[in-house]
Length: 76
Image 1: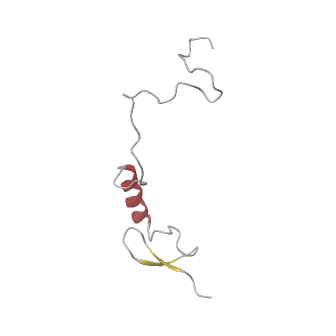
Image 2: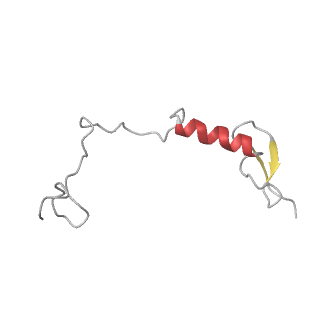
Image 3: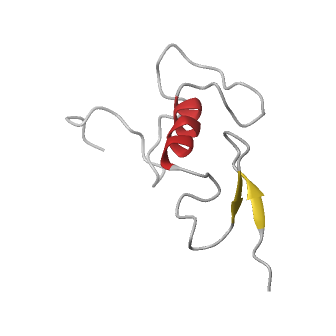
């Protein structure tokens, strides 16, 4: 049976998709880290609309249980 071959998304090098390629889908740790850096610096992003920022304030003022999320000293 023939192993599946893929191209490294960073450099385009051809590699085998198997346990012999521990960094798959990348050809090396270097290519993996270059890709991660591009995501972290927002050179890459998932397409979609930008979220509106509310002057650094959270968008929601409720906890998961629906209670108002006031200051920690405030009784609920």
